[in-house]
Length: 219
Image 1 (cartoon, rainbow, N blue to C red):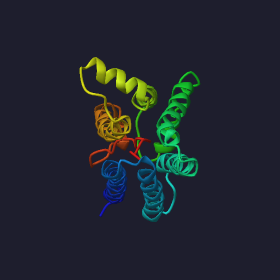
Image 2 (image 1 turned 90 degrees about the vertical axis):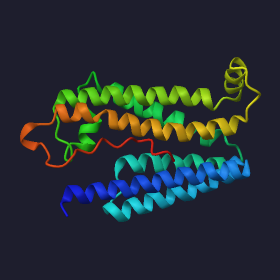
Image 3 (image 1 turned 30 degrees about the horizontal axis):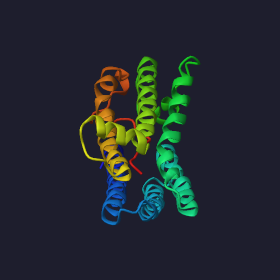
Image 4 (image 1 turned 120 degrees about the vertical axis):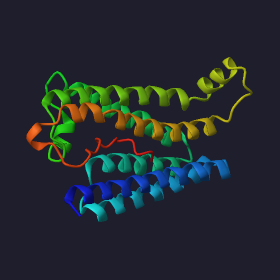
């Protein structure tokens, strides 16, 4: 087994763990209708995901560490205060910070993705610039969307405008988390043509290239 194939296997297993954690979180909420109980599952799943990531790679990779760390911090705050505001704010704060770092790096011609993935992904500086811009805008959109879907007032207004009965705001936000995981996966795959087009020729891999990890794993 080549190193590339082994790396893809580890990445695939970690994504499966992350997806399982998200499903467990969503299932717990829709079964119990209790966001605090669902957050307990989130905290436990985040710790397990970090542990498995460390076992697989013998290190804490930056992207999973960011998402897992945020999930643990805001999950614990939710449990301690008995207030689900914190677990919902996690997405806004995490993605807004990521957007600020990425978009703020563009005028300086410093590309954080290159520092994180440059050893595994050999593309031109122009490709790194475009990836940085695209992911920065993506994270900004996620932060804004989360502010809409975590607000009971906004959700009720949207449902009312659509002529639907008053929704369960927590249920809507939880479903939004699932849709966001799918959107993140699609967005990551949509970057493959840009990456392939801008591969440095003498470093072009024999096997299909992996997409940059999306810092929102769904936790």
